[in-house]
Image 1 (tube, rainbow, N blue to C red):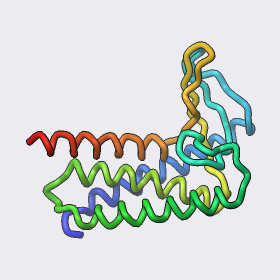
Image 2: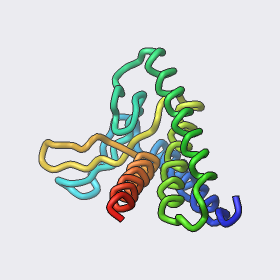
Image 3: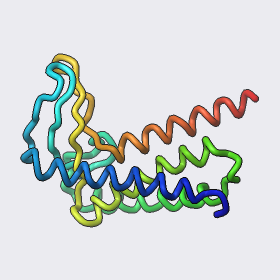
Image 4: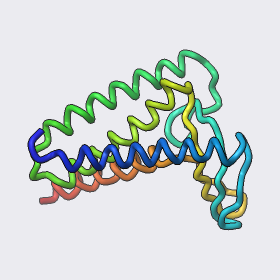
Length: 158
């Protein structure tokens, strides 16, 4: 716990940014509507994702899928929390990566618990090829996961 105060603030800031942007998108962009921001590259598109990150299993309305994703999210969250507290304060990049994953996991879990879906809205594309829509929480988890992978790769080499 000692030395991790700034990371708690960081987690809270990322979580707050995620929730505020989701609230903002629900108030400014109607569901299933796209607003062009950078033509040919980036839209704000308000969607409800009932699946996992980047829309995986997103079209399913099956309650089994919902409860599976909820359980998987909780297990992953508890593992990240465990490693967050277990990691020594000197391993700053590891804690930062875990903080990003923790903030993102909490952001999407809040959506699942209170809405039964996750609000996605960042829509990057080139021509007709669209990257799956995502949100700040998804980006946070992805960046944190890449950080962990890079740390493990470079730790093994050292």
